[in-house]
Structures are given as structure tokens and as C-alpha cells.
Length: 54
Image (cartoon, rainbow, N blue to C red; front, side, top):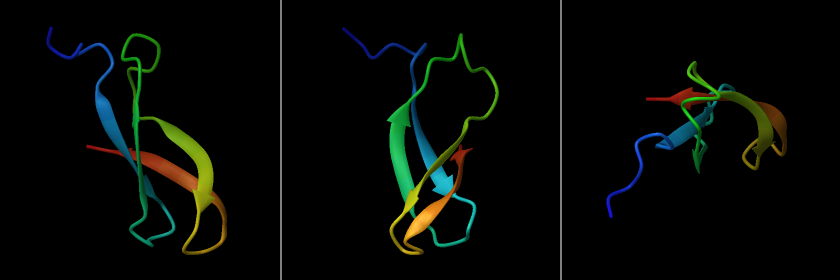
């Protein structure tokens, strides 16, 4: 069975400019817009905003 396109794999890239990324899945039905989450950036050693990168 093929992967479901309702839950695609996305990259979350740091807005601090460090280039650090997280890889996760999202539900397109619940979040049709770009996803933004506050997560830990180990390069800066603090929490920053991560935005969906396409």
C-alpha cells in the first residue's frame, strides 16, 4: 500500500537561520496552511520558531 498523501512528510526549518531541520508528518485536513511550531534548536541551545519548508 502506498503512503497516504493526506499525511505527507514535511521538513520544519529553523527561522533563526541555523539550517537545523526536523522531519515530521502533518494532517492536511487539519492544517492546510504552513505549519509553525516552537521547538528546540541545538545549535543555538534554545527554543525558536520552526516553519514548514516545502
